[in-house]
Image (cartoon, rainbow, N blue to C red):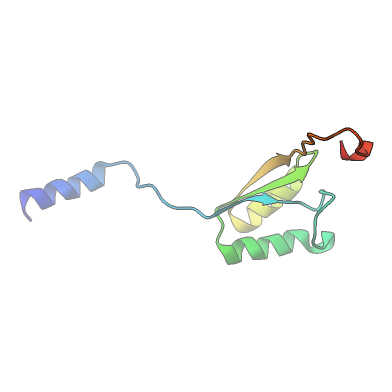
Length: 104
């Protein structure tokens, strides 16, 4: 092994871990969200299947007006090994006048 090859070997052995790519999805709705599209009865199993199929490392649930339930996030994380994050989707209306109060 040349001195340069030995230097490279030692450099790799002593360097910090290399950066790696992760697949993430930052916009999902849990069954608690008013616009959840799936079956509440099978939501965890359905999300687990999709997260595993897509090989996601991080998934965020951004429900409207409130955070997703902690038990839901823990179940998703436990079943997939992915980091399940709680997010919040906030609706902002510039033209709030004249809108129904439930939309403001």
